Length: 245
Image 1 (cartoon, one colour):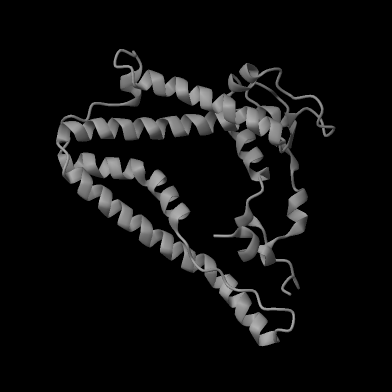
Image 2 (cartoon, rainbow, N blue to C red):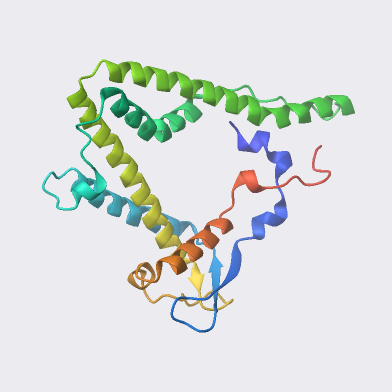
């Protein structure tokens, strides 16, 4: 699916500049609210955040695969008493994200062909309708592909013994837990680097990553949530009046 071709009439240029914001929060233990200034970090910090999160994720994966790790049971409970079909359903549920990504990457839907400069108004209207209908057609194809992948996975899992299924369940759960760990640390990193003590956006409000991650949970959640809103997402862009050629 091509964002450039399909959504080029749906871009609100003004939103491209909504990369900074301020949020007022009353941190626990303080009597007065504090104003936090946030700005979307650049590519360099994004790259550092990815490396930081990958290392944290790899550390958790290594621990989860270690049968002697003392905290393993807190992450991976013993499901040996579950029925086989229950284990299969859990594995499928844990695999949905990966299967969805595969379905999206593999789905090919013919994009509307843009009319030339001599096209009539009706031809332009039809073209715009095809653009408007494209996300729905694309979504249906992705859903169909995902359904097929789920069926194939279920049939394959039914051919496997319960003991092997439990192993597959554990691996699927580890992948999900590590994915969550990656996201958590990535968001921590970019939010720490993107939160300042003034609208000059020079000095970060937290002295260090440790200072940020040890801050009260509700404060950290509020800052991360507000920072995420600054991230530019194509589905949030509104149509510009008169943008259609």
